[in-house]
Picture 1 (spheres, rainbow, N blue to C red):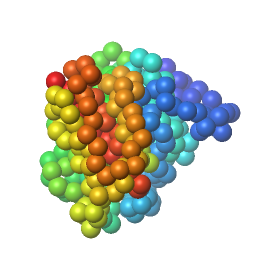
Picture 2 (picture 1 turned 180 degrees about the vertical axis):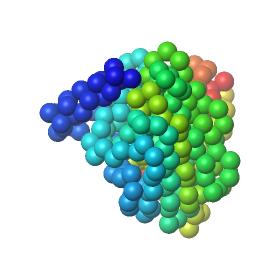
Picture 3 (picture 1 turned 90 degrees about the vertical axis):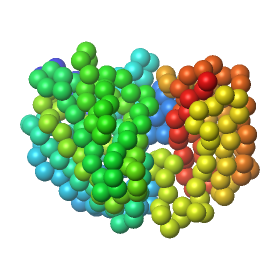
Picture 4 (picture 1 turned 135 degrees about the vertical axis):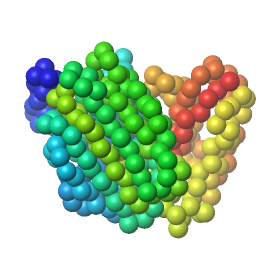
Length: 280
C-alpha cells in the first residue's frame, strides 16, 4: 500500500513542477485513448459538471477525494500516460460511491482508471445506470478484468485503462461503487466522452454510423454531419491507418489489415466517435 501511495505522490510532484509541459505533451505515441482521452473534465466529488456540453451533477460518499490535477498512468507496455486532468481518488480509506446525474439522457461515457491493484483486496469499479444493463468496452486496458458491469484489478500489478460505459438505453443517472482498499485508485471522465452517443433530441441529425462491426473487406463510415477524418488503432494503440475525409460517407478498404481487434476513431465537425471493430 505504501509503495503505491508514494508512487502516486511522486507523480503529483512531477505534475506540478512541469504542469505546462505535461499538458502540452503530444500523447500520440501512447495509445488510442491517449488520443481520445488526452484530458479529463473537472469533476468534483460533489458539485456540478459539464461533459461534452451536457450539464450534470456529482454526489459522492465514502472514500472519495477530489484532485484537481492528476496524471493517469498506463499499465500496458509502452503506454506511460493515459490522460491528465481532474480525478477522483477513490477507495484510499475503504468503500466509496459516486453518482453522476445528467439533465439529458446520455450513453457511452468514457472513463479513465489507473492505479488499481490487489494488494489488500481486488479494487473494483461497479457501474449501474437507470438506463438498463451495462456493457463495458475497454481499450488500452491492462491489469484489469471485466465481468458484466464490473471492472476489477487483476493479480500481478497496477491496472489501468479507458472504458466506455454503455447501457441498453440512454441514462440520466450513473452510479459507480467500489470496495476500495490497496491504497486506492483514481478515476476520471474523458473530455471527449459520449463515444458514439448523442443527446436524444439530436440523435436523428448527428448520428455517426460505422458498420459492420465485424469486417472482412470493406467498412462504411457515414453521418449527416461532415466527416473530418478517421483513424484506426490496434489493441496496443498503434496507428494502423488514417485519412482526412471532408465528406459524409466513406468506404474504407480493410482487406490489407491483419485479422484482430481494432478501434476506429472518427472525427466530425462536432464530436469524436470511437468504436471497437473486429477484422476477420
